[in-house]
Length: 78
Image 1: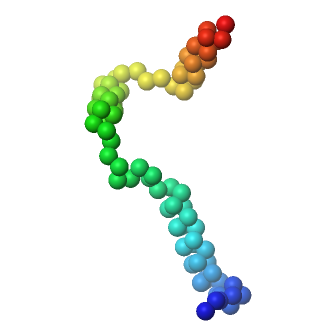
Image 2 (image 1 turned 120 degrees about the vertical axis):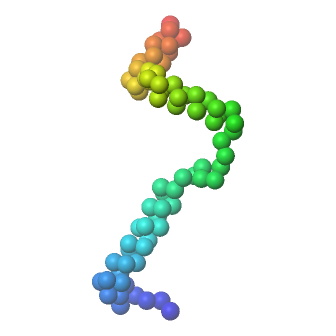
Image 3 (image 1 turned 180 degrees about the vertical axis):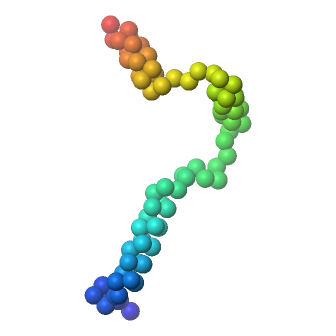
């Protein structure tokens, strides 16, 4: 049976909207890689990188990376 919106109570209508929004957000925010395994080589590189940072290793900001890349592009383009 199809129910018209005009036949719903405000409470029921609100409940339906909340359910739809919650489902859509769950779809959009879910982890697409959930359940997948990392390749052993990648996991080893990742662990090494994390250990480096945890031991005080320097990381680069986005500005530093883009600056370096822009410099490299200028050299190649010249």
